[in-house]
Figure (cartoon, one colour):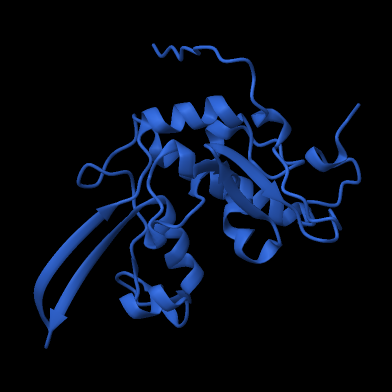
Length: 212
């Protein structure tokens, strides 16, 4: 019997228009292509979005960020998502002079990604069947709040669900290394924490991932 809380039989989870879905699919495809081994690298990294933001604003979740080079203002959420899936480089200025640089790498390794993909298989949001291998890996507990870049703190979210998570009403937590999700009240009035069906534990066994 189908579990209505781990699927979307009512077709109400995804309210995007066809045009928005095409936009998001293109954005996801570009991100996947940029990470491919055959693509050119910039200083050893995939083509990178660089966003400038004041450290105090990022910590407080207020204010605006800007795109490097053009200075175009963008919502602070852009900086937050860039930080979630990339690295933070802090540059300390004193009267225009650079007096300090620190870098915090928050990127899940290829081995961690494969393990998370094997565990969850799809975007964690019920009813979304984007393969986990196409997804971004989300820090359940933010790195800024002490969350580690570890398989026990990473879950796959598709491009759209990753960017809409903060205001969508969906909540994610980890329970002994197992992801759990709680939907909005309109989806589950009881507001129970539920284990996504594809992540339900199986009998203990070793799983080997082969790569040629």
